[in-house]
Length: 117
Image 1: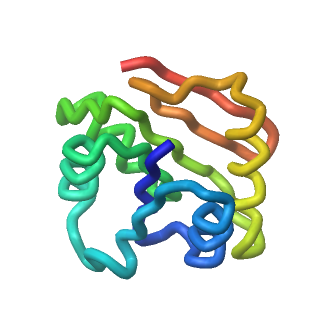
Image 2: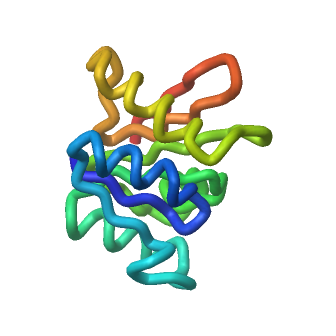
């Protein structure tokens, strides 16, 4: 799985995922300050799944027509430690029960919702 961590994703979690063998790019170090639409374009061209805490990605998909093939994972968490997203996603990815392609996946504190596009 090829991942693209948005600038608001924690660097600690990026390192956790990279250490586990995931091919992950971090916008915060590679392209800091780019627009969300540019993050989408990068994910589309490089076939990466976006990891973000930014709710604007739903609008980019459903109102502006961006369709990243590998999907977007939006974490709707307010309180967490920097390592929590990485650890959570490692467990989620290892289960292989959820498919992310062509899906907006919203991970809340108590549930996971998906919407196909």
